[in-house]
Image (tube, rainbow, N blue to C red; front, side, top):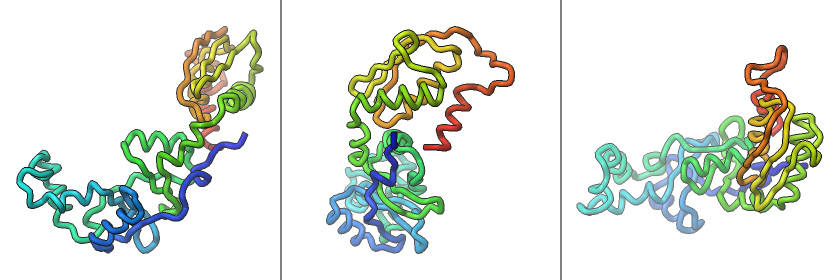
Length: 241
């Protein structure tokens, strides 16, 4: 089954500014495009930072004693004061920019958005050049994937292809409801359990994974001549996603 790719979901026509773009032009662009942030790119189109509406606020409150600057802790106050005196994007921007590579997985992009509590990610190529923008809303099609499609991929791609086992009622049960995958049954080796869970988490549309799995052989100390199942499979998976 074909996986969703960042390049399939991202917006290619990106609003961006240069480091020397004037403050007012940045503000007008944010207002006209109805976005809360834009990438800052150099002459080679490489992303060097991001300017958000939050970066503009210190300018408005710098002359208000009870405003934003007065309420901030000292280190944050220094940064805010510097932004309050900024006149161009390069002085306003937050750096380094949080970006995602165009070949990264959609799951990785979603984790970056959540981890950094941001709403948009600049998408860059291998040289760091801006090629698109990915917002939280752009990821919705992935998480609206039908449960049956998710189950089919977990059964055929994860268990049959990656783990090399046939899914039957006598071995493993894979149930999916509202994007949550529940795995029950028995695997040959104990080390296959974390591998199965980790790989299932990486399937497009999976919200969470729960398991009630047992094993026949406890191979926690490894099997002679056999690499760790979890790390080996994840390494392969990273290479194809």
